[in-house]
Length: 363
Image (cartoon, rainbow, N blue to C red; front, side):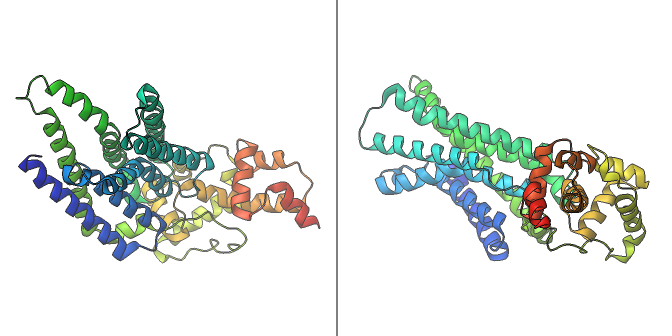
């Protein structure tokens, strides 16, 4: 390992350690923050795995390999919690992650024990898991872009695209480093004057350093924004929020709040399927930026879908409990475009699916 590579390796590890320590000391009680700390540990392990002296110890090498293998999976979990305010980790995601990590560990262990798995080991132990993680990585990019318009947290809106780009680069480096190093080693073996492997290693390590340095500078400069971004979020529970959002609490935004209450409580604009924050801003003759800030800071919603679901499920709750109207009709009446999305939102808010809620209300 060259002197420049060693220099940037030390800097990258120190910056990741600093990031992890900062998050732990200030935000360790937040679920997203704890996952981000694990991500830092995984990236540090990835960097340490490039040190040949550590790889000579089988136990240390295996621990570093396991943590490195976990990097894309941890990133996916963090992104799901960070961007998906109402999201729980889906069972299929956990199953894919378990399969990915288990297969990689088993194949690597067998390789360390001297077993020659041939093409089967290469495809089953490397290519298939890599394709799974690439799929999850694409999902990370999708989550970052898909929720941009509905996001009510201005600080998070600003970093969605940079986050997607930077995290995507880190994942690609982590996933393809092994295969790329192997290929370049073969190419450079015929020409020792071209140290391709060292160059690639230096570029990857330096990129991780500058990426982490940028995040640290941004975090230290605006720790209050970091707190907003990493705070836990959960679906609005109508069982405990009957009057929580009925009145404005910020005097500077009273007039806009009066318009919002009139639009949602009296005009019931949420009945319109596909209703967006741009449409509401147009109806209220205000800017999207101001409307986002008001809904988020005054009412506490983190995305516009949460805001719509609150009003839709609040009305649907009474229709389901007090009428015999078919559930599907109620779903369409309050603004949902499918029964499945209505059932999901209803259960998340009230703890029971609509049919069971109706039966319990009539008992």
